[in-house]
Image (tube, rainbow, N blue to C red; front, side):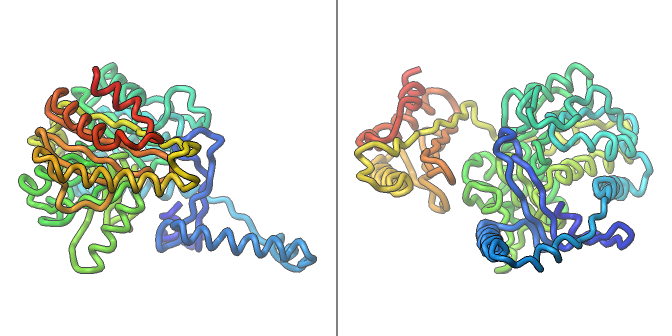
Length: 433
């Protein structure tokens, strides 16, 4: 949808002035909403608020007899364009170019796709097959908003298990999975190893830093300490950990470039990834094309090379043995809130936690942190932040073993125990296991 505002093709009425997409992303079908695009990118919260206010005003005025406006609107012309084919063709050309303009640079490679009954099924017939890849075993390619097989979400364990199983069952070289509207993606190598979350960011960072040495990689707040070490010590880049929310991450990368700090990659652990070269669009298909480019280029030198060339790029990434997210819910009806908002209450919890941590010699607050309270200690770290939309304080813990993870959990539990509107049941359960 965004690319339709950029593509120059007069015969197909392109570029368009604006694009609107109806999607609920990976959420249930009854959560559909609208995404708006212009050539400047996706519209943000302030833009959408402005549109709603203007629309409301026009509606009110038209209800009072502005017949002329209704007549003018009805005179519009509708043209049907198969833009997906145009868009997919550009992706194909990008891979061919990376392989020295070879027509079928993926010939002999077996790649399976799991579209989760979202919009990503096009990738098989319109991208992979023209590049020569074998795609047997690809699954759930037909769109179905009821998602009968699994939630199309690269963070979902069932979804990742489905694509991993498809790779192993078909002895494929690579597996690719998309979320519903293809703005997020992940991969699985031939051994069944998942390339998502921190691993996918590490892989993309390795590819981008080869092209742009020393560049800054912007991520969300829940990325691991091991990723920082990998980006900065092994790849020679800079890791700028920012807030949760893919728009926050992308906007921060754009801001850094505007003040002279070069950044070419903005990526969230959820699978949202955007590159400067692709107009900062979080395009999951383009992200996978970057992996295919790497594969295609390597296969021009050695046709026997498979997904190991990608796996080798993340060699040395330190990964925690224990990774957990616990959601601490705020009871909005609790007397402890005294009629205030859950946001105010959550902020009070975070302030108290920050003060309590300062008194524990085993814990150290992150020197630079843009969201919530991030603390390292006991060989790992934790982050407590306030959810963007819900009355919840998500707690993320990573540690080298269960005992150390429990120590971090106990530190949080002790600090928040006096906040009776906070439901710590899940945290209690975790530290008592």
